[in-house]
Length: 349
Ligand SMILES: *Cc1c(COP(=O)(O)O)cnc(C)c1O
Image (cartoon, rainbow, N blue to C red; front, side, top):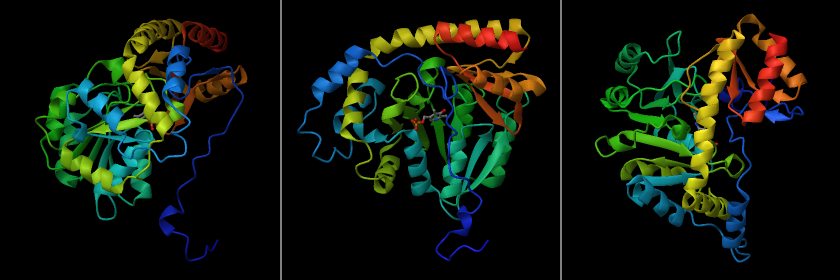
């Protein structure tokens, strides 16, 4: 098939992201917060946003939100940049520090966007596999870094889709090179381990956070990146100037002003995760220890069949395929959702 010359050869192999939408009752496939966004906070957002705000372009730096985040994190506003989801910030990292002739390193299996935006920006992407039990292979990581000399290293901590976590000592070993280390802390509220305290000591550390998971704002697209000022400046150079709309900026501020509302939900989700883990073991399948709000579960050869059966019964979970063909990734839901999931699994195992 001959395409006209304005099509790019480099994109020929890439499949567009087209989720196949199926009807469902329970959604446990995208690690979203299972609880509705609190009504009182919704009211507060609508009180704060005015009709005068809509015709005007939003603040390109989300200054009020940036300041609030800086105070919470003990960094300066100049150490933070907001994004239209952390997905956008991953692309910005590649635009600023990747591209043709540059190399990024990731660990597999992990978050597909690290690979995806490398591909789009024609950045070479290398992968170091996790061990068979999904623990982090530091020795192999250090050896590959020494050989490949990547410009960027992406580590999701906790990792998606495995739920595994590395400690700060491991992260410090990965920082002892002249690359940027991006630690994606999308699930930090569920792990309690953050590399933020290392920012003072390591100018090559970048931390990614999101409002999409524990903060229940996936639909509004809000994420942020924390790093040293010089790195932030480069990201601001390449980002879309009006990347975060005014509604999301205000929603982010209201969420930060009401953090205690989410603390209860987070506690509950962690307790449910541990309960679900034990219940899955009791069913005879093999869950992987998780520090996030999902559990990777080994079902053996029936994984795909069980996935389809759950869809038939209105429950969505994630089938990842590839090296994880025998696994399903299940987001921790509300107690009632988890009960229904377990019931259907029990009937089909
Ligand atoms: C869900 C997730 C994100 C969040 O992306 P947003 O664009 O902020 O919604 C980022 N990183 C990882 C590893 C994730 O699993």
